[in-house]
Length: 258
Image (cartoon, rainbow, N blue to C red; front, top):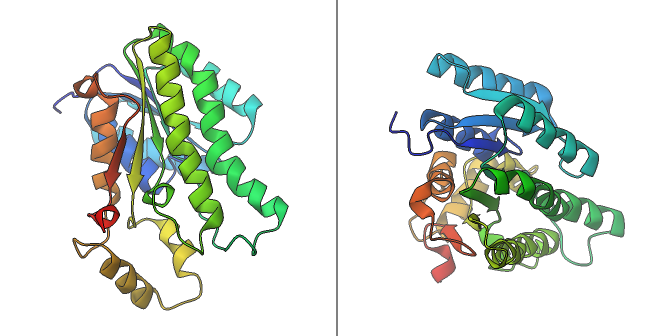
């Protein structure tokens, strides 16, 4: 263990699978104590148990969190204070991909996507900042997407919500800097990553065909891996990036350069 985030106290949303789980495993290996939250409590518990078994110590805890509910955010952060002694890193990872053009959505479904992808980040930042101030240096890492920077006709909700995360991250960063706090906020922008969320893109189509088409869009010619995104989050969570704030880190195989 290199200990790049040794002593850090980290809350991760959407940690039951995919990128969130990969982030939790890597940060725990690098010395952090991680609180894994997910609306699927059983999945978060299983991931936490796996981390503790691998490391031979209680590096991971779990807590059920519906990121769209303010009362549950308050409860989760209270648990972080009690169980870990506070918080020094927040990773807003939970999200959903809703396919469709601007004409395809009804208002309720539009609001659902915005609630999960944007309201969750607002609530997390708002209520975590007081704890982060108490444990400076602090870091907020918000998972946006390359879809927050590059638009597509068929991803109206996802484009809009992830773009909102991108600029909200900058606003949070500037707010904390203006207050004189050593609390940073940055966004991470992956492209197609090999996680269960890709099934939302596959739908009822032939999986191999869809994945091959996605790979062809990436200059490096392949999909990304969750562990590669986790490495970016590790950097932003660590003190190595202490002079990095209001920035966006693209993990996209070069797709945004086209």
